[in-house]
Each structure stands twice: as C-alpha cells, then as structure tokens.
Length: 119
Image (cartoon, rainbow, N blue to C red; front, side, top):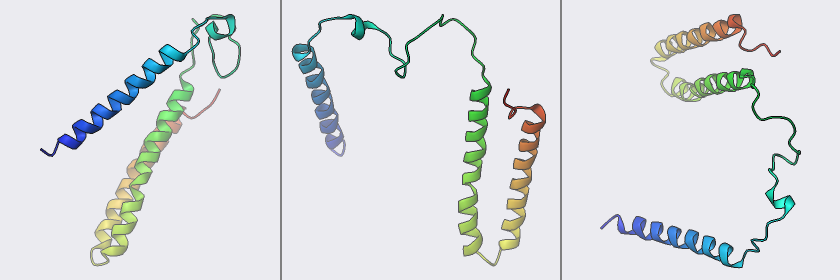
C-alpha cells in the first residue's frame, strides 16, 4: 500500500514524457537541411580527424582534485565533533593529525610522480 504514490508518480512521469515525445514528433517540422544535419560542438565548427590521441593529463588532475576535495570534506564533521566533545578532544586531535599525515603522504607522492605538472 505504501508504494502506490510512487507507482502513480512513475505513471505520471511516463505519461508526460510519452506525450511530449509524441507531440514533438507530430508537430515538429522534420524537414532536414544542411544546418540541422551538421554536428554541433560548443559553436565551433569541427576540423580535422576525430581519430587522434588525447592527453589524459587533464583527467588525472580532475580526479586528483575530486579525491583530495572529498577527503577535505571530512574536516567539517571533525570540527563539529571536536568542539562538541571537549572531554576526549586529545584522542580526536591525534586521529585528525594522523588523517592529515596520510593526506600529506598521498599529496607528496602525487607531487613526486609529477601528476600535477602541466605540460
């Protein structure tokens, strides 16, 4: 019984999506022309071949940013808990120093590997 609202919502979503697809098919102009059939990429006309190698340096930097950013999110709950529980704050402080040390080891490893050097 508790799943009936979810089922109704799914049926409404499918009905609206299907109606929109049907209306665009029936009312759309469907007349192909040269401008409609050209590939679009950020407003820049394409040139050259699409079969060349891409540098993965940007993706590596982006993944490293996400990794260190997500790990940095854990500082906020630590700060809240550290202020709330003052009786055991020395243990919490030691744990956070250990956590920061692990992050620094990872950061220095990334720096020594040259992953953040942009060429």
